[in-house]
Length: 324
Image (cartoon, rainbow, N blue to C red; front, side, top):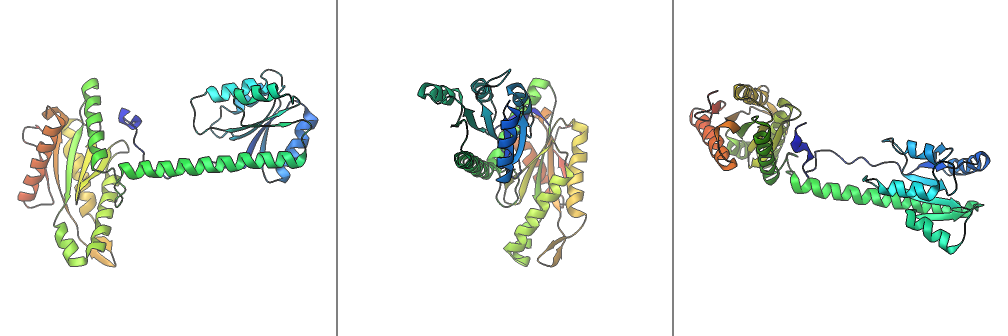
C-alpha cells in the first residue's frame, strides 16, 4: 500500500467489534487463580490466565489479547500497579478495562492503584457477588466503548465516502490525489489519473427510472474497483463521473489500466430491476509527469475525457503530450 494509506481517512471496512466476554486473569497464587477462573467461567467469561505480571505483559502484546483485565496487586516480576502503568503508557486504542485485586484496603493504597491506571479495584478475599458485579461493570464499559468507536467510525466513513457507491467522495479523492502527488515528487515516481464517465447515463435514467439508474451506477463503481489494483484509488467525482488514481504507474502502463476499466464495464450487461442494460464508459487519462499542479492535471484529464466522448464514446483518450 502506498504512503497515502496513512492519511486520516477511513477505509471501506465495517468496524470489527471485539468480544467483551474475554478476561485476562493475572494471579500468582495457583489456588486463588483457580478459584477466580472457575467463578468467571461459570458467569460465561472466556478466561486466559497468567501466573505473574511478566507473563501477563507478554500476553498483552498479542493482537488478540483480552481487554477485560483482572490483575493481582502483588505479583513476581511486575506488580499490578506497574503493569497498569505500562498498559496505560502504550499508544494503543481501544483501551482495556483494568480491575485490580488487592489485599491492601487503605485509602492511600487504593488511590495509588487508581492513579497507576486501574479502573476499579476489589479487595481480597473477594466476595463472589461483589467480584461478579465489578466485572460486569467492566464488561458494560467495554461494550459502551465499542459502540462509541463504531459510531465514530461510521461518521468518519460517511464524511469521506459517497453514500450511494461507497467510493471515496469528491473531497476525499481530491485530497488523496494531492497527497499522492506529494509522494511522487518526493520519490520521483509517477501516477496515472483517469476520469471515467458513464456514457448516456441520462438516457438510462429516463428509460429505466432513477432507481435502476442508481443500481447501474453502483455496479459500474464495483466493476471499476475490481478492475484496478488493491493499492489504486477510486472515487466518485460527481454525478456519473469517477476518478481513478493509478499509484506508481509509468506512462506506458496508463492506457492498459484505463482499458481494463472500460472493458470491465462494457463486458457484460448490467442487471437492474430485472432488465439487462448495456453500459459503456468513456475514459480520459493523463500522467502526473505532464502537469505542474493538481489543477492542471484535472484540466488535462477532463479534456481527454471530452475528446473520448467527441470521438464516439466507449473509448479511452490520452492527454495531449503524454507520450503514451
